[in-house]
Length: 465
Image 1 (cartoon, rainbow, N blue to C red):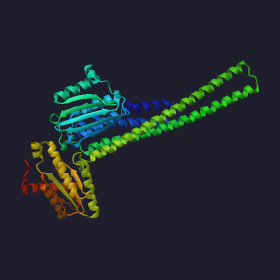
Image 2 (image 1 turned 30 degrees about the horizontal axis):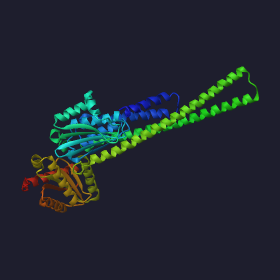
Image 3 (image 1 turned 120 degrees about the vertical axis):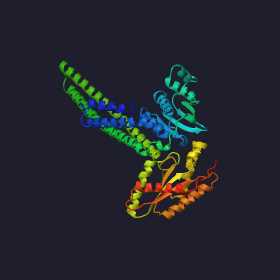
């Protein structure tokens, strides 16, 4: 936190000290710096709280850890989490990422670092790389022997979970840490228990506020730099005028000892003014450098925010809309249907037999089934039709400017295409057409009720063993 909110508070303290001497720009800069510190502390608190992290998809949780640590340095950290492992948001994984990235930020003198999580057979593989100073062969082993508790804990825990952990040097510089763990040893959270986009949006709002505050601080420091430049100009003009007067007096008459002493004092004063002007210009240059870094951090914050929005809007496995975002978009479709008078059909889709596939063939096979179903929905629905994942095996779709007959025909085609594939899949669909004055929740509830009726009357599918 030293280079994040604490740095902003230190800037505020400096501006307060200068407020007694510099008028105009310092006090606004103080207010902006304090506001920025408060906003960023709020963002970091919500971002890093363990109870929040444990409820998020792994990609979002790791992304928050990386973002918070990048605020402490100039290290650019990228995160890439394979969709197949996004549900394994395990506390040990989070702590390992935090430990390794903290080492990079504090000791590696790196410009960039990367976190990659992938599936390799039945194992989850975490890799953290950086382009820092690296280490001599055997240094990691020595560090653990000397009592580096973080690395010791990671190594012991990995062994206890029947996994492995190691650090190797990269060429030409940097380190490469690899943690391999069996997925069966990790806690997997069902997707319908993960936080929705509404919670992530709150943190995104804090990030946006922090970026705006950084911009305000940068602008205020630019004003302060301009004020110092003006003061430096005034001091140099005064110094030059004094020098001219002294030289003129010396040329017009021969000064006595007292006058020569006073002239020397005035020359000393002029030199001090010139030195003060130089200090002001150096301070101005430093202010502008701080402003540039602040604007760079603002750009980084906003880029991270755009990435987070993209993550929270789409289900990382299927690409469908997440529940919170999708239901808000459905509400807009309902309002649009009311304004235009065009029809709207809501479909509640259930993937048949997902639990059995997960139990008998593993979650990876269940993930493949979900991806296939959503791909079929995308193929046969229109590009502007909404597909939202509202539960582990449930999706809500909306078909704008459509009636029940057209919707039935589309979903009959989808069911048939899924059923005749070599690895057959089956879905059950409940349909409801929007009624006048009906709310979004009401039309979704009717589609869900229609799905329940279909389940009772539809023959059970035969799933491949």
